[in-house]
Structures are given as structure tokens and as C-alpha cells.
Length: 494
Image (cartoon, rainbow, N blue to C red; front, side, top):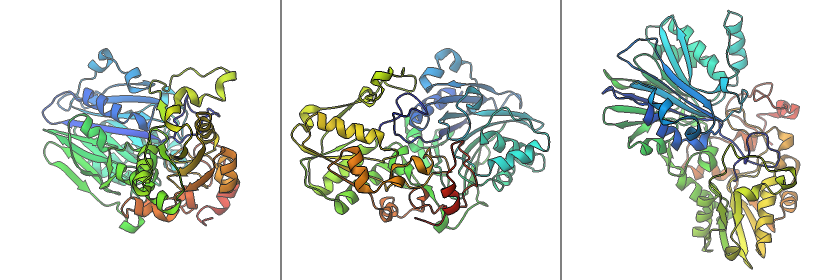
């Protein structure tokens, strides 16, 4: 799928966005960790391009001193040798953000740093709490004053308040987590401990790594490899881990659910995560290969060439080619330098704005019957332009295959899926969508293939079926128009 060309809310783009990436490092030898967090965030940049930040502390210094820097923009736009060099400390947390709840402003950038009677907390969060409004209201009625509009601040306040009544900060994290409903992968920095927590359903990924005497928490294993760290294991759904020099990695598992209730976001495997990452023992790359193979088995078509829409469609296209025997090729050239800060095209060019990001290779497709693999269709606008691009380049036929089922429901757990009336599959049949995007044929991955695609892991597929792992909120926490039909029928299936 083509990423958003010029930021959130561009009506000419048709892409999904993940919420955030988190990173934490504790170097027991006392070395500064800011540069490691910087390179780790760089590896996680695909998880959020709106803002980023790093907060560090010296465990041998004052319990109240935290150095931090955050701003709007990409990692390499926000940080430079000067401001990175000022971040001195052997423990720290970092964050890259894309907003699905809370405005896209500097005040909502993370990590959040909270000073309270027990010292300081630095917090980075990936996910959405569906009961954030209720938790926030409870705090406001007891005098809390909020500086942001994000649920991460709600989490930080609850951890701080629980810490007043617990012996350890990790116990406070566990008690605060018991109040939270929804998706969260947390990295928490206290004056002497690095703590990671993952929601009981395992919606969002979090893993543990080690390099010498430094321990790392990260959203994806690719961030560990970027800084030369060894992958140790994933933080299990419902687990809280505490990292200290005295005890290494300690586990607290009081939040766990039965395996059959675990509900990882399937789009980590389809689209969000980097293909070189592993999540809960499953290779993202292999999952996408599997999706392509299943598409070839279930929705075959005679063609001359299989191509993927960069980047997330490439591995699925290779899987389709491997299973079908139809040659795999490269039909698109992607401009890697069009980022979040790209200046919007003038009105006369906006309809073709996708061509600035992507261009078809005429020599590859001219006169050929092409199977085009993409990860999803949201509103259909981008898919139609890419099909048109291939036909303009001389493709005789374009058969579209999608490595996920049709979107029929919104997501409340950290994926930027719009409300139902904006989803093309909610309003149209597959044949109608095929005609609207100008394809010669169209087929989606079957929903029953999803568990098989990820080796039998427990997954959330609520955006396809309307059957969520927990009751959705009675209002759209993402700030968009809330579809009353979804409120009436969520959880009932379609």
C-alpha cells in the first residue's frame, strides 16, 4: 500500500497508519543510551512519522533529573548531533508517533515525563485505551490537570498514583494496568528500573533484547538488530517485565489471559511491521509469503506477471508467484525521498499525487496480463490510481489480489481504520469495487486463512468481522464521526 503522501487527512490518499513505536534501553555499565535509542527509533520509523522523542536519566544521579527532547517530524529531522549529545544517561525511553487518538501537536509527542513525590517516570506507549475517557474523568474529578489529549498521560497518572500505595514501581504498573481496557505496549523508565508491559490480549508487540550488559525493550525485533543486540524473547501478552542490574529481567504475569483469548493485531503481520521482524515467534516475512500463497490457491487467474505494491505487497506477491508458478517482477519504482514533510501538490496535480510517490515501469508490464498484490483497500482511491497507472503503462489486464479480507468495521485499538461509511467494502460488493478501481478481476484473502497465515496465533480480526475481543466503546474514541450502525451491531458479526 502507498503511504500517506502529505500527512494525515489527505483525501487523495488511501492508506492505513499504525499508532506508534516504542524503545527502551538500560546499560548496566553506565554508558549513555541516547544514541542507541535514536538508531532504534530510526528502525521503527515506519510505525509513526508525525513526532518522536527521547528521554534519558542517570541512574547514579538525582532521582528527579531527566533529560528529554521531542518534536514534530521524522527521527532524522528532529535529532541532530547537538541535541542528541545533550541527552546524558544510562537508562532511557524513546517513541515515534502517528496519532489515532489525540491531536497531532507537539504537546502530544512522547515520551511523557512525569515528576511526582517518588521521583520521575518516563513513559512511551503504543496502542489505544478504549476506556481512556472514563479513566481521565476519574482523575480530573480528583484534581488532576492534563497537559495533553492523549491516553498515555492517563496511564502515567494512574501509575504515579498507584505508586503511592505500593512497594515497587512495577507493582504500580501492574495495578494501573488492571484498570486499563484496550491495547497497550508500554515502556516505563523509573529512576532505577526499566519496565515493559503488554496488554493481556497482546494487541501490540513488544520484545526484549540484550547487547553485552545493556538490555533493550522495543516494538519490533528489527530495532534490536539495528543496534547490534541479540533478541531474547517477546514480552508475553499480559506480562510485565522489570529490568535491573541486580536481577536482570524479572517477570510478573498476573494479567495473562488463556491462550485462546489472545488477540494480536493481524495488521502487524499484513502491513505494519517490517518484514525482517519476528513477532511472538512468527516471521512477518513468512506470514506475508503465506498470504500470497493462499491467494494463489483460492483465487487463481491466468497471467504473465505477478507484482507487489511497495513495500508491504512485495512479499505477498512473491508468495503468489511461488505458489502459482507465474513469474514475479518489479513493476513500480518508489520515490523513497517523499516523506512526511513533502509539500502538497497544487490542486491541479493532486488527483495524480500518487505518481509522485510511485511510478510504473513500462518495460516490465507493457502488453502483459498483470496480477497486482496489495495489502488492503480502504476507500479505494489509491488502488484505482495504481491500476490506472499500470494500464497507462501498457498492461493488457490488471488482476488485483488483496492480502487481507475486506474492511467492514472500524478499529478501536490503535489502527487508523475509518468509520464504516468511508470503507469501500461496506458500501459495495466485490464486483462493484472491481469496477470502481478499474481492475479486470478482484479477490481478497479469505478471513478463515488469517490464523493459518500466522501459524495459529490468537489474533484480532474485528475490522473484518465486527467481532472484537472486548466490547468496543460507545463512541468513537479516535475523534472521527461515529457510525451509529457500528454501535448497534458491533460484536454481532456481519
